[in-house]
Length: 204
Image 1 (tube, rainbow, N blue to C red):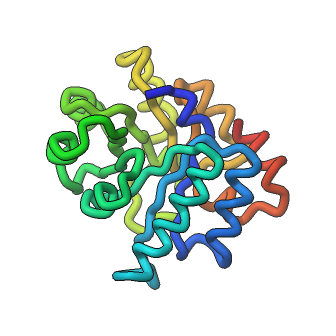
Image 2 (cartoon, one colour):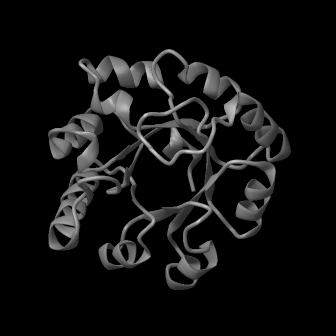
């Protein structure tokens, strides 16, 4: 996996934007490096509408040659032949997906040193560390991990791909990178941006 993929990692579902496909298209045009399809939460799509939206997002990502990652849905990721999957600590174990899709990217959310070590041991391709700061995009988010754990993780695993997530915006992205992250994963800052080109430049 190329660590540059994590540079500006955009996560979105229909609940995050009034015009999600238009938001994704603009984000792709202005330089995101990876996209994670995350359709969760109140009012999220289900069934055929859920799949149709996923395929529409994937089509856009392919047009701009940007990796398309599915959040926590192995069945959908396999059906779509997605570039990879992202799972949390409470989600299905990495090895199950690996056995079905050996050449795909697997990302794992981690919140402490034990979870990080387990993710690396189980063969994750990258980890998402967070929330770095308080976040409004995830109602069940854990307490902020801050930059200290990120710095520790980088010292322990100098070459392992790490993306920071949670409450990151144009004003603090540089601190996250300086603390050891290869990139930043964001939702709100892109969905709510009035000047996407400027926002992504600052995030980079």
